[in-house]
Image 1: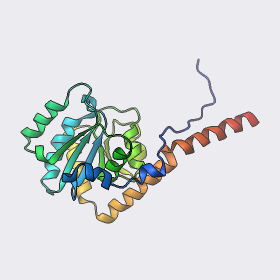
Image 2 (image 1 turned 120 degrees about the horizontal axis):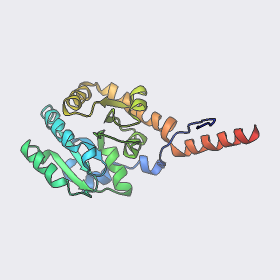
Image 3 (image 1 turned 45 degrees about the horizontal axis):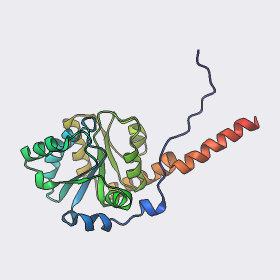
Image 4 (image 1 turned 180 degrees about the vertical axis):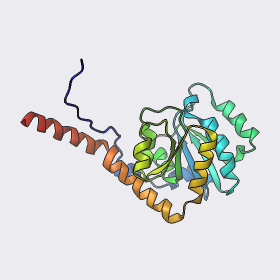
Length: 219
């Protein structure tokens, strides 16, 4: 019974120049032990559907490849999951390689993005993933799962690496990241920012919506 002349206008978020250009020093001053570390950043709420247990297990392996790798887990803990995840990290003997920042806001959040070598959201389900889009806005490549609904855009535009939502495939994806050349990583950073501008910049998408409404009215 449904009939319509459909037109899809992309979703996204607003990120100002001041935000995505925030210097990483603000974050490193807050967490000085992270200076000179290769940061893998998780930034979202701490929840079972985010696959953080899987991320910790996969991080164990890549942390052995380079002692400067460090996992930053940023976000609120609304259901009290953090303690069990810390016990898992202790079991894998990587407690000292993980920093739990709590929720980051405003310029400290943007500084954290710009401190990261790669952003990882290991979700088992995600209808969009605003934090992923914020990472792209900062030119940070993304590692995420095929259960995130914008994973195809990330893969097709070369803005990151996509895996299945299990530890083995995340391990393999971290290996792929580790084996990329510095030139390939730099190119991925450029493509991440370009993907945000073309697909997920809410200012651009709002204008597309306005333009479409105008064209319909004119017809």
